[in-house]
Image (cartoon, rainbow, N blue to C red; front, side, top):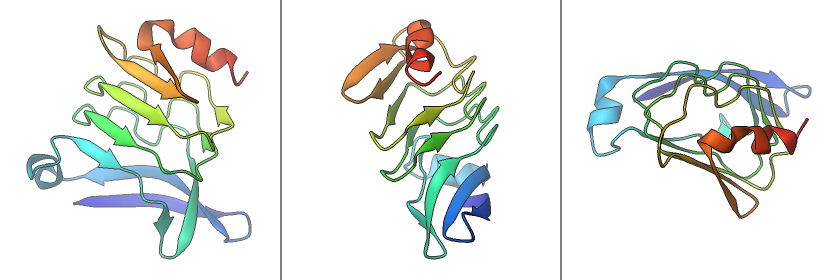
Length: 130
């Protein structure tokens, strides 16, 4: 399974994901390395993926980020070298520097607001937010 590390923000009304411990069975039992960030943890809305939250999670092959997340911190997915694609919801208004660094490779993509970017063109994604 997945054990989420998080902290409450906004006077306890929202949650920032700080990390995830992903046990091997979660990857091996049909998920094929695909992780879905929950939209709520203990009835509190997840609104941010914090700095370094998934840094170095090399076994993740894909990730779903729920609508309502507005912030992806710097280096959030750094070194997630097995990720093939990430679809960023339209609700995201900030992506930190190097959020996807060292995730590049042929055919890997990030989709945001209906536009699909090649990881090799990651500068275009950061320029939308900085």
